[in-house]
Length: 63
View: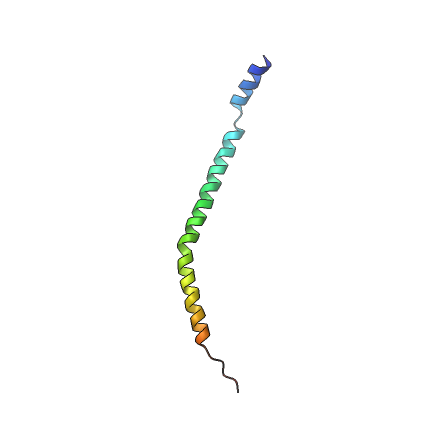
């Protein structure tokens, strides 16, 4: 009888399902973050190169 009660309790328990939901949601958020990073990194690299070349072309005048 203990085994049958244990199986019934396990069947009614929903804690594992909630954990799976959170794992899926977290994976989706991480995936979206990586996608955004990949799409933005090219533009920021180009902008940083332009800023760097502009600053390198500047001269400092001392008197």
